[in-house]
Image 1: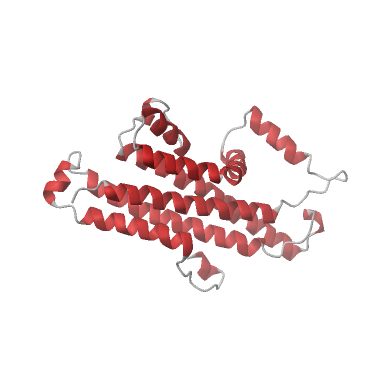
Image 2 (image 1 turned 135 degrees about the vertical axis):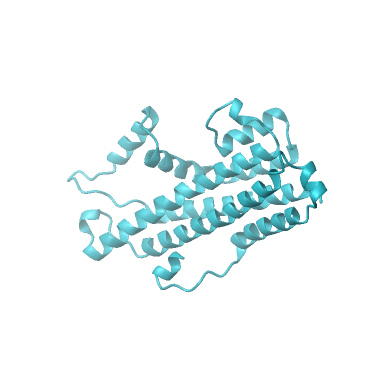
Length: 240
């Protein structure tokens, strides 16, 4: 979709993105083979299977939107060379502003997908995380799985993956919180740290675009691999 606006070639599904979409597709196929009797045994008021199908298609759409936003951030971030915003040409400043827009859009979507995965896991395995914390995140659900010893092999794989990508996720999460949440003491500290990046003469330093895009790419990779693990595991529990 966004590639068309940039006159870019259509995306070729490959790598982690392809594997994630395939995992979602196979899960949908498995749900589609559940017969009437199976649907009744795996549903609440006959609605469970259709809801899981709708949810799964939503993950495919969300992943597509994340990848497109990442692509645009990478496209506009490429070639930004100035160290200070004030030193940019009008063309470079416009490119930088577009990069920032799609970069922010992408990292917000990273955590949106993860949190939706948390709700999916909570619903699928009856974790009751909402009784512990009304508004919970994917990471809260992982702790709940660990504490309740629910689906231990799955929880261990997801935890290991989270730990492997901890640093880029931590940096993006901090930026996400500053972007969409109310201020708290920790976030004020973060903003003061950013303020200190302003040059002595008042010029505004350009963000570390290469670092940001690297963190975004790694976090996208983590999201894709999390989807693969979650839905391959979920597929095994569907009774046809």
